[in-house]
Image (cartoon, rainbow, N blue to C red; front, side, top):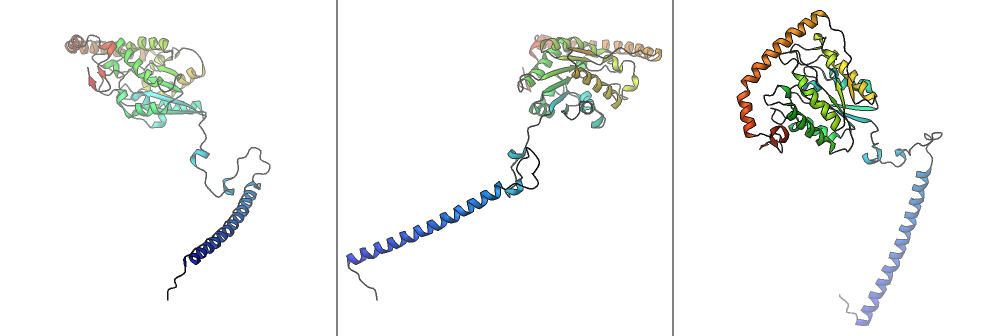
Length: 330
């Protein structure tokens, strides 16, 4: 049977319930506070207790085992103190047809030691000039090299560019400068080295010398240290693979030593010393040079019409380039 209480008794009953609830709440809160304080003191005592594995070791970081939680990456990662070196170029940098360990960047790493981190960003068949079949700036290796943000940049281009029908020293120089400047946007003062590409022993023998003056000019403008390995290989046909263009692992070792020498000094120009050439190799060089001269003259004649048309349509292409924003032809 439901009871009907008068209004004053209902109010009194509610007040009593409220007081009871309030008292119980205070008791419960007091208990929780006491428990929390006790746990805090225990935890503090545990954290501050020295680990037996740390005694006698000055400057040792607290052991993570004491907290029971694994450290985050931000807590454990230590900024690298290694000097980052990026080797940028075409197949001569990549070490085409060889194991990675035989490339000059890999062998340079061995010479420089653990304080350096050398990365190979060479891309086979790439060009500096923007009218080449594979412009280096359009490759994944370029993007990776930019992101790497190296302290030292070592460039070696020209072996492919010099064979292009529209190659000129000025065109090559300006395009090379644009490429190098794109790396200088990410780090204000990286040390720069420019390697003059080794000469080939095929029908383009001697042609690489057309890149010497542009590279020397860039060395003065940037400034950068220019490395000329010309005499390393001139008297050594055995340093080349069967295609007469790419080098052997032994030859890349010689190049790595020359680059290492340049990095240890402060000279703005480092050239391989002149080596004696045997009469047999000199005779072979003379024959090869004659053949290459005739071939290159015929090649220029066959492409003269196309070059004339290009100059008529784009008279300033040597300074402006032929492409804008990587793929939109002007």
